View (cartoon, rainbow, N blue to C red):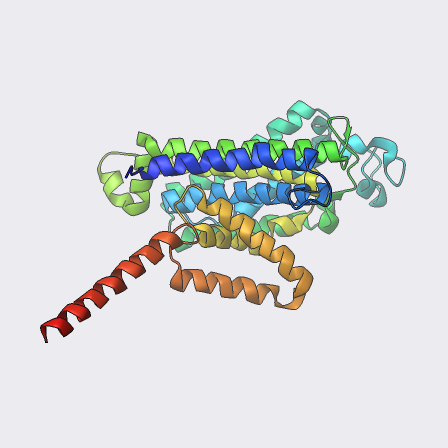
Length: 376
């Protein structure tokens, strides 16, 4: 019997997921006959596009928490910053199609603005907006991470200060005077790259881009685990002091990983906004970042596909529960997290191995009892 290594199994899993998301789902949406079990409707494809963006955020947190040991409660902030950066461009592209027929975004007209604030003007350019999706989360993560890692803040203290940063930013974005739409945020987008934003073809293209981007992120993580950088990264997770005493600058490694994870989440946020049609401070609430932690834990921390499975499963469960049992959703989520922590420490991905170990253990005990009874 041929035995495959963990690396080979992970690569095969990534290829299978990529084929299903990039090829099979768009094909079933385009060519599947309506009413057929195999047909994927435009609504379902759009919903899955949102799930894939969430999956990328989970993968970015797994890069930090699963492979580096940094529990960050601020990934929701980086996700929202990327969404806001691209959302600014989408708002400016509305032009005079808004409710007030003004070149200014509707919320600015409502608040009495007479001209576009200076920091909004560069976002008329698509190129600048796409760069902002990268450098806004990256700069925030770089400055914050430099100060935190330089002070050797880690463990639960790092989790707390990232949550504090997220909460502070959330309060700031809720203010109308901050020029980002207040609690309503950005919405009522009309076009993206000149195409009607909610046209089925546009949403299909956005889903395809999201699926390709998720696949690239998974291949990046898979490749990183095989490199020297990835080995040092996991060594930092297991024993940072030993790595530091070996002559490596753990601060530099953690800062690079923190910035990369922030940019990864920011791009996911930029893809999320045109598919959902809104971005507001709710996306950067601390509770949102805690949900991302649950996604990773449920799927399987420090695994390639675990965060993807966890993000899709928990968000599907959320969609189902909030429709059928809206008052019990948070209880269901909390119970799921407790169940995973107590009985499934390796998440859904680790469940088959866990069950195999359970079976071998009890089989061995049964054989011992059987042998003892035969001797008696």
